Image 1: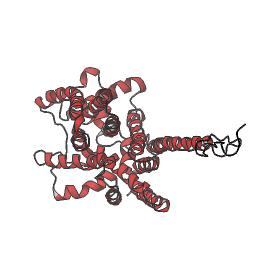
Image 2: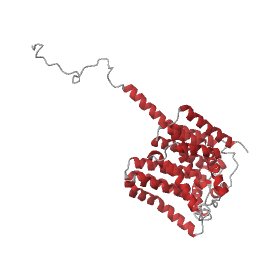
Image 3: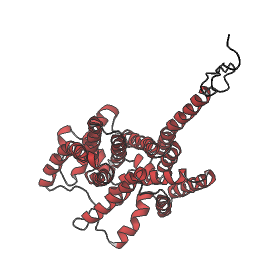
Length: 367
């Protein structure tokens, strides 16, 4: 037995003291609850915008009057297969007309049936807007961005029209989401689906391939070592589109239709792009507060601005300036707006979101 003078007591920091009540143990239930809450927010960030877009887009989809651009789609859907060519005045419509012809074979050629692919594309785009903003920022930013996109009059309008623009919007968001994923975890196989999204984008709307200029700027500015792999993926996606466009241009077709970018045409673009000029002003103002030079938001800043500048430069040579040719950039503005609102106080974010909803609703009222 050791006496008190020779006894060595363990230091408190080294002793493994039993805690029978578990008061000092990690709160596993709290951690699980926090993880579950984040998971629910991530699901809500894409699910709620998708549901809202579907509900708003389905309203009057069967009763809305046909637009000027839908007549060609209706003819293609009811024509013999051999009567649908990939050449003509507007070669961009060829692949979409083939899609509609196959769709009509399965579901009929009523106005409602022909508009459903556009509605589904916009629903998918809204979900991806929420997912993209969640990836580059937070679930709150994703939810706000998705709701902004769903409320925009142009999102609703083109969800109700049998035209390829909704599919191009979906392809643009998908390509950007896949690029962000590939750049965050760079592996060659992650760029394979990105190449497929580029192919889909080019088939839906060739002029929307201006998005690649924005993607290229982001890769060069922030992920330069991945440039070669990105270029290889782009080449894989572009080769079939380039072959198709080459045949069409050789036969006298146009890549896109539009106007010369005069002052009057340019001034009307924000209203046509967002449904009402005031909405364009709100989203542009929010974009200023999203710190666009940081990598997280830079991908959407480039997406919003670089294609517009590219189209403006192209329109100096050929009359291709049109708001519908920039429709694929609208999700970028929604993401920037969502990122900005997520950094504001809850009351302020809700007030701005309510303003967006009010302006959007006013734009839907009959003139």
